[in-house]
Length: 322
Image (cartoon, rainbow, N blue to C red; front, side):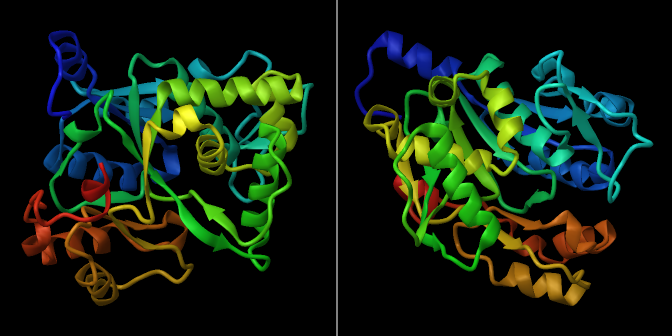
């Protein structure tokens, strides 16, 4: 909290805790259960945890509803012209949404759309976005990220190189959609596991996409298809001095990650957790790795000793920058 604040600022600070956003779906139900359990155990000073799910999966997630957790249907954040195809029409077990305005988009695209729409429309100034495959193993206090404090902007400089096809394309489409000059490589990467967004910044980013494309921002993204919501947000912030001032750049998130395909066994996951830094508060084993949930649970129990809270004077990373 800033050292000197008037009464109005103190009231604003107290009334604007960070909200958590997690897009998820039925196949990630067990992982989302782990996330919610770890949030309830370790994460403090947030207002609500929103689970954003396809309408057809609402019954699977309804039991997560609580005083601080809300389950919302994807349709609440999507235009009427974008509709889900019947679940029997799938490709590689992926659900798709269709319209007369663009080619069908996958559930992965829709998760990105509803992140943006939720951050623009839900009644909070600040958001911490968590994928459903994250598990917290240390205490994480979000009070220092309340509005009007700065929030972290993950920026891994010069990480995107020519051999990373998808990332290169996401860099290019971000610049096209935002009306920015063509990028050069290597370029910055803004994709991470624990990502913070500011509501007014997100709204301004969407308005910029509409001004550049002449289309509703959702239609513009559906037509583009190859985009990354985190890349869009990062490049928008980096190129707007006013919104950039609301953020503090950090080269990493406080999350140990495993992105590879082969599933981990218990010993391998234990070794991953043992490499956690002093300021790491969570880990992520990507759902597509196929690592069984019971292995993840066992590793969390095995490493209970590392759950000690991060002290402010010891913490680096986000705590040092904000």
